[in-house]
Amino acid sequence: MEAGAALMGAYVVFSPARLRRQTLILCGALAAATLAVAFAYDGWRAIPAAADGATIFAAFFGTIMILRATAVRRPETATARRGFTDLDPAVNRAVFWWRPI
Image 1 (spheres, rainbow, N blue to C red):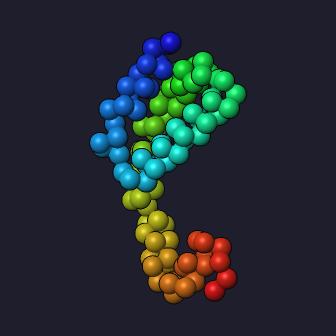
Image 2: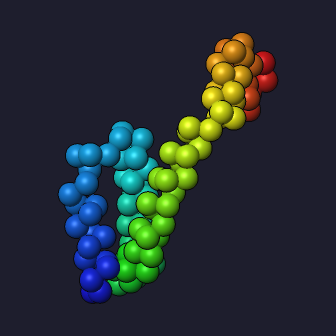
Image 3: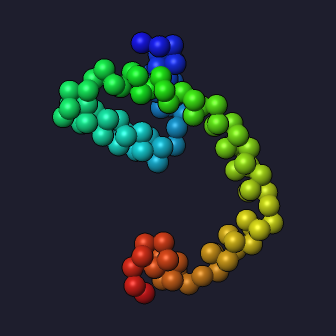
């Protein structure tokens, strides 16, 4: 096992206490899908290799956080949020859940 996979595993083990509920649900679903595919195709050796290859995405995390923080401070973001909060709740649900009004 490469060092990247070991560090990624340590991160997964020690970080759940600080994650939001939605993130925990997403991580749980991804872990369940990974285990199901590994079980179905007997691909247990692919998991550490994939984790090692995925460590490159950690390098982009800081950049994404900076971009998000910048976007939150933009006046256009505040205008869009006000626009969504001013919508009728039935219209808002229809837009986001693709249900007819």
